Length: 474
Image (cartoon, rainbow, N blue to C red; front, side, top):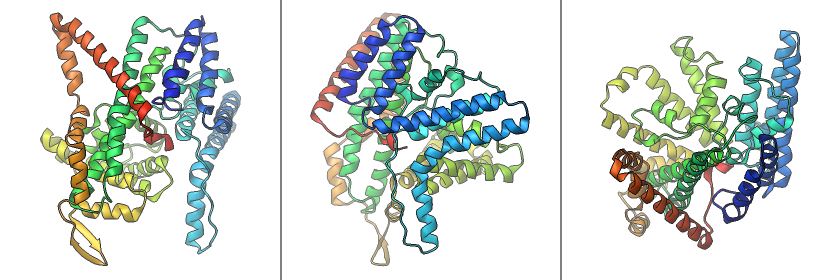
C-alpha cells in the first residue's frame, strides 16, 4: 500500500485515524497503531511481515542479552552477534544473488542464483533496528523491555517503507507519552497534502515525461534531459514521501526530523548531501564514518573512510555495479572537497558553486538511473556530445526528433518543476504572513490551493495508473 493510492487515502487512513483518536491513552493508541502498521505493511506482501518481525526480535533479544552481560568481552560478542544476525535478512534478500553471481562469473562457473523478491523497505527498517541496538550498546538510550514498543518503533507505518530513517532516541519518550494538539493535526495534514500534491501532480508527470524520452545516448540533449528530468522526478517523488511521512507522524504525535532541505541550491557536493536524504547521511555518519575514525586520523585515513562509507551508501541503494560506481563517484568528489579543493570551494562565488554542483549532481544521476553499465556509458558520452556507433566515435548531435517532440509535448513543465524545487514558495508564504493585513488572506489562499490540489490529485489517481514510488525498491 502506498500513500498516494486510493485505498490508502479513502479507506485505510480515515479508518486508522478514526479508531486511533477514538481511543484514550497512549497504551490503547499504541496497540491500534501497531496493528494498523502491520496491516499496512502486509497489504501487498503478508509473508514479509515475518521478515520485519524477525529482524526486530533479533535486535530485541540481543539488546536484552548484551545489556545484562557482566563482562565486557561477553557484551561485545553478543553485540556483534546481534548486528550480524539482524543484517542476515538484508544480506540474503538484497545482496546474496549479486555477490554469488559475481563470484561464479569470476571463476567461470555457469551457476546463476535468482534474486529473491525484495521485501519493501527492508533497508529502512533494518537500519532503524540497528540504530537502536547501537545506541543501546553505547548507553545513549534505555533498553526497551517491551517487544511491542520496539516493534511499533520499527513498523510505524508513516516511515516504514521509505523513511525517513528515524533513530530510536528521537521518539524514545514519545512511545510512552505523546499527544496531538489541534495545531499538530492541522499542520500535519497540511504537510501530508503538500506531499501528496508533489507526488501526484509533479513527480508522476515527470515520470511520464522520462519514460517518453528516447535512449539517453540518442543525442546531447537526450543525455542531459534524461538526467535533468530524473533529478526532478526523484526529488519530488522522495521528498513528497518524506513530507507525507513527517505530516502523518505529527498527526499521530511523533516528531520526525526533516529529510530534505532544497538540495538543488547547494554550492558544494558536501552541502548537497547535507540537504538530500538527511536521515541516511546521519546514519552513515554516526554509525559508520565516526566509528572508523572520521576525519581525526589524517588526510589519507579520512579519504579511505569517505570512500568506504560512500561505497556502502551506493550498495545500500542496490546490489548493482552502477550503484557502486555512483557511491565511489561521490566519495571521490567529497574527498577532494575535504582535501585539495577545500579552499577553492570556500572562495568560489555562490552562483558558480551552485552551477558546478548541479552539473556534478546531474552526472551522478546518470550513474544512478542507468542500471545497465552500457546504457550508462552511452548517456555519459552523449552528455559530452560523443556517440559511439559501430566502433567509431562521432558527434552525438545536439538534439534528436524524439527528444524535441517530448519537449514540445511537456513545454514548460520541467521548468515549472525546477522552480518549485527551489525555496521560492516558502519564502513568499513567509513574506505574506509577516504582513498583518495579509495573514488571513495567505492562510485562506493556502487552504484553498491545498484543497484544490488534493482534489486534483485524487481525480488524477482515479484516471491514471502510473503511480510508482522510486525509493520503495531500496
